[in-house]
Length: 250
Length: 374
Ligand SMILES: Cc1ncc(C[n+]2csc(CCOP(=O)(O)OP(=O)(O)O)c2C)c(N)n1
Ligand code: SF4
Ligand SMILES: [Mg+2]
Image (tube, rainbow over all chains, first blue to last red; front, side):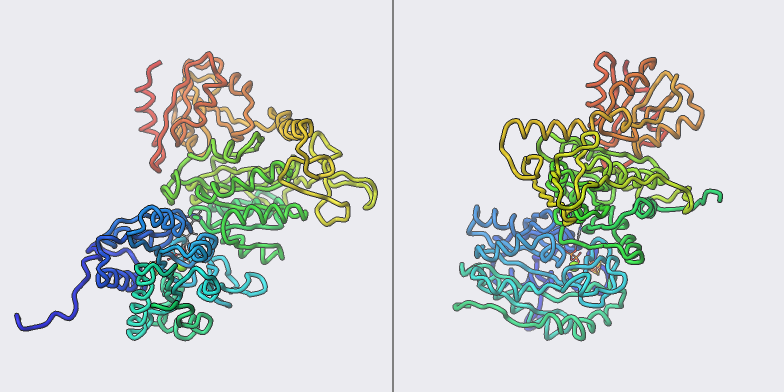
């Protein structure tokens, strides 16, 4: 045994608490990636997570660090206050699409344009998971939800919002990228993007955000495998993956 | 045709009431435990070619219904605690601009995100005083699914009549439970529509210059009268003014239009009027008292305000004048109790309260009555 090399270990930043996420939900994978990056960048002792109102409110139990659960949509404002008061800490928000792209649009846009030295992990599953499957600002055309029972109609419900494209127009962000977790290769790429985002903060380069295309099998009414396929076949067509902004030095 | 009986969930009853009252526009943002109202309306309003829109948050939701109401549509939103907090801006605006709106607040445990799925009556004082400045408000408190249906119709009527926000202050339990409701699609329910000016477009017209019982006879915006609306203190022509007399006159008139109808508006139910112990209890909390009364407790009586605000002190004083003991029971730390103490200064008023997201059971109530010291 002694001559075997350890190539993988569970990061100590993830708690052993039983998860309450639904089977096939990708919140869990994203939690692991974030914790691994923080661990690998040696930020363990310094990092504070701000969680939203949404299914990931429960993340306060799963991250072994100080946690603040903000009011719905306000995580970037709480993070701003903490980061300005404690510039040496590494502070990130973890937000859903309803939280970030609907009620919290003002907060995220202004944190980004101010160039707040915070990082945002933006989990886009195209629906309000926590409240039981209502239309989100990111819900795609034709998707049936509890509040778009006839399918999202662009004339009535308007267009889904592309946050990365919008935020990358601002001067404050140092790094803006969209990734997905629907295949192992994409999970690896997501981890890389999360690492770059935290580096932008640690190196004092500006605001950083990674949008991660995610699933909600429960409220999509699909099994986990079909949900992953839906990302490939539908979500990614409207939300292209890639880096939208990356300043020099990253 | 005989009355039609249905088993309905509170949210369904609220939606049926809104449709009966003539709702033309709903804007809202999902929040437990009010979301079912929005979800049902998203299906129902589309069928009737009326407007349903999900907005980006609660501030936008209440503001959108203000816009639609100015355009002449009967408008409503539904929310719960955290959303109600955000709506305070809109409530103040609708008050000073005199825009009829109906706001359903399905109370849950607070403060803040609090107890999202549990019952509470913690927003009583917020519904009266949540928005800044002196302002009147009409707050209705249903204690059953039937009453939620009826009060939703009533709320639209009162909003249109007084051109003032009306809050339906209900709770998680009432909106989620299923009860027998009597609804007859053919019955004639009185429906009130706002009074509109009868002058010809082009004639002299002041949106805040002509009144029916202190309520301005305003045209709908865009009707060709030349209507100007603002959240600032304004003159009769609707334009801003910082003049002392204008401001004083406006805010006093807005109060007067509601206050002078206090005794009509303040509706109460009284059970066992001669009982020794008179409870003052409203909404879901009053059901515990009722269940004792219905299970052979002649010593217990109930005064149940169906309207929480405006309060008519005389009605409360009369209904409790012979009681040996007065007990306020509510699911907060005594918000209405303090109001009752204020209007019953010569009586000892007791409080049996509960917070934490649970109802008071009849047995617990009996025990807590025993523990009272007169
Ligand atoms: C002011 C306010 N409005 C509404 C809510 C209700 N609410 C809780 S979570 C949520 C949406 C969550 O959706 P999303 O951000 O997409 O996260 P997910 O659950 O899908 O991960 C809403 C509307 C609230 N808590 N506060
Ligand atoms: S409701 Fe959707 S987002 Fe929430 S835990 Fe379940 S699958 Fe995940
Ligand atoms: Mg979501």
